[in-house]
Figure 1 (tube, rainbow, N blue to C red):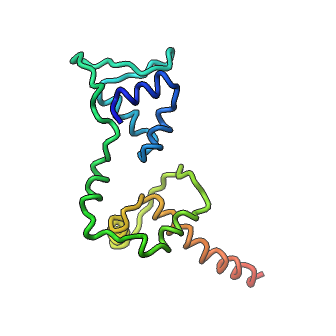
Figure 2 (cartoon, rainbow, N blue to C red):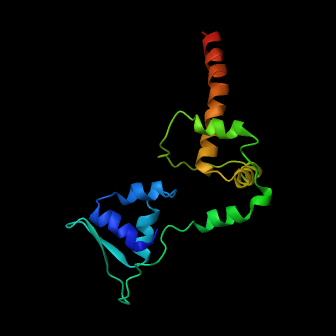
Figure 3 (cartoon, helix red, strand yellow):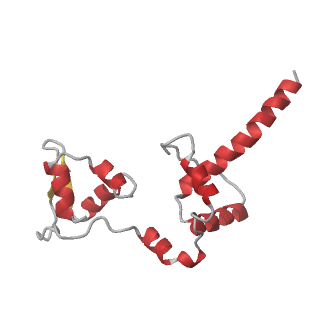
Length: 156
């Protein structure tokens, strides 16, 4: 998608830039950030984007929905990638996670070797790290919550 197409969709057709970003396969703020970097500003009063760049030449024909550097790197690094069609269990598990929004950001200290293994795994499967971590936590809780509950009940 070119800048002029995005501006047309947002300014003239009233589409939501965040939803367009998600529809293009990006995080919800990606297209907005790219417009800002190109010199565009958003006018809240008119609810429109306009060009405010210093050089005066509006980049209307510039491609704005290019893949991120990370996605380009992952696409070029397919030799270590796992074909999920051959191993559908992981993909099926991700699709069946019982929630849709990944709103929480947590940080915690853990073993570096475990994190390195997880990063290697995420790179191999080329899937969003948040979903992989969510699946790991979900499966951990599904496995150990009943055990802890049984222990609590047996101590009563």
